[in-house]
Image (cartoon, rainbow, N blue to C red; front, side, top):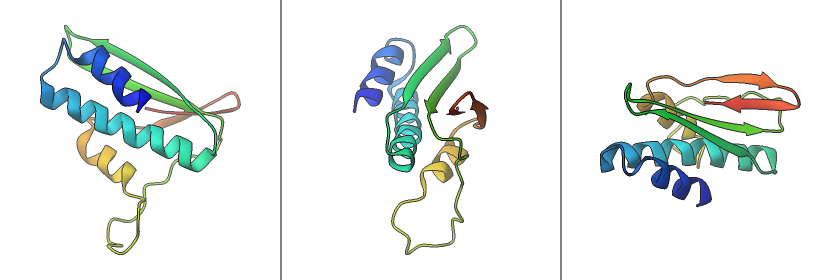
Length: 105
């Protein structure tokens, strides 16, 4: 909830409601993955260039395990579709290691 609110407040005056809602959804998916798969908190960092229209959302956590995008064909599985949503909606996404963990952007 905190991450969703932060993204909405940071972008609401610059972007259309639809784009803000998309950014909120994608951020929520990455933050949820970090919390569920690490059992710990995470940190959120946003950078936005309104002139270029470029938004980068980074979520860092203390797990060195890289996120895994699961197969979309398993319709009976509960959960596990967050990265599919991110891959489908974001222009780009990825991950890179940091000292003691990783960042997903």
